[in-house]
Image (cartoon, rainbow, N blue to C red; front, side):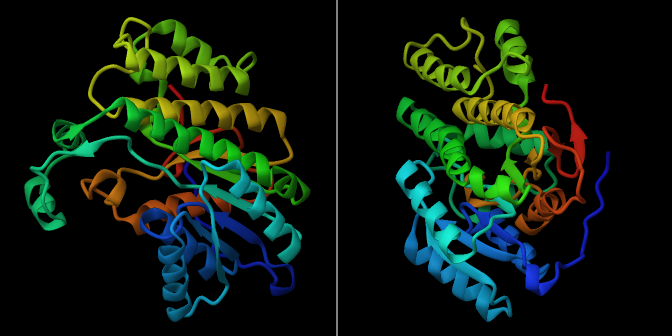
Length: 313
């Protein structure tokens, strides 16, 4: 199914309200810009108050006044609860939640210099070649893996749980920004693949448990023997996005009144991948916004590769 982006704006007296996590730069900032330009009141959130406030000022300066900043560390449930209280008091509703905040869980080596150098090196390269180059020039550690799961999976869950009552009241839309790296094809063991794809029996509690098991196996160098992603780098990132995809599917099944989907915006040039991507942040954001603004009764519990429905495997 190929989506067509809608440009219809809501009645000003019934303005929709959206939250975008990690909204101070890259794809998140572009999502804020595009939603605000379509008449949505946007709450731009970021962990860094200075950067978040500057991003909002920049959007105001470009003629988009309906953007507000609220500080949010997605990995802190208390922060998420404060955000929910703010939205309830200020707007009394929430129509769209874009869980965009995330980290890649790796560190680049000293060979990577500037964005210009990277673009020169990768000019004419395919997506696969760009990803291979990134992996070859990156290192991973247990500490980075733990942080990756904490932000990408648990952060998504904390924010969603805090804001779910407001979303449910509005029959809202929830987008978990994901990646093709979260597809189950990257798992080396069939048992794990089958369990994560068994949406009738998979639970959030089991996803939480899997996160802990992955980190234990990471520390003990048992990833491949226990069926986790073990090759081609970004291992924690792959697991974090696979768990997030599982969370999307569980939640969509439990909350049929909402539209809950995972979206891979494409391999975009952003800080998270050290500008090695092939698409612009603006292009990637347009895919997320297109799914977020689908008509009533649209698909739910799906994985979108850009704007096209695709398998979770």
